[in-house]
Image (cartoon, rainbow, N blue to C red):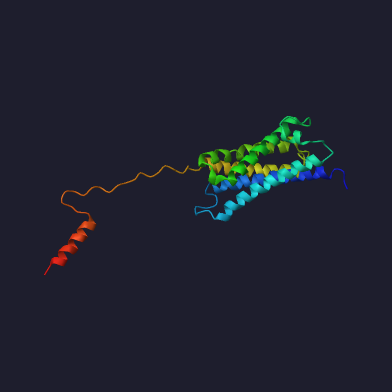
Length: 210
């Protein structure tokens, strides 16, 4: 077996994890705008967003596990879970660690969304943007495939799509969540009965008629 198989696996899982994260963030932004149409969003579109985010967490976990198993660059759990503990490219590795923790926080709060206040869930979910930025910086600074034309092309495509949907999201009019004022019917004027009372009075008079 190739002695660097775990190193290749770590690189592959990291690239797939970044691609899935990009797709999940882009899809989530698209769901929050009218890019997918004005009609009510089908449930499977939201499920797809959650599925992509969950897969991203899984592949990032495989990325970390493969780095622990690899002997090409010696990483322990401390170097992979504590920022700046690694002596190999400490800043890019630290960026990846912080991105991983934020990603786990986003996915965890999404799973228990119904038990959290809406504003707190929204604040945590907004960290998806920093997660993408940090993971992209980690990819470009720590990755050994940064000079690959395929990687550069994938990053340019991802950055272009992210910039487009983010611009649409920022420029879209914000929905007004304020409650509509409660309107109460005006009180009847003097000598005027409500419709229900008038109907009852008419029936009463009709019953007394000869």
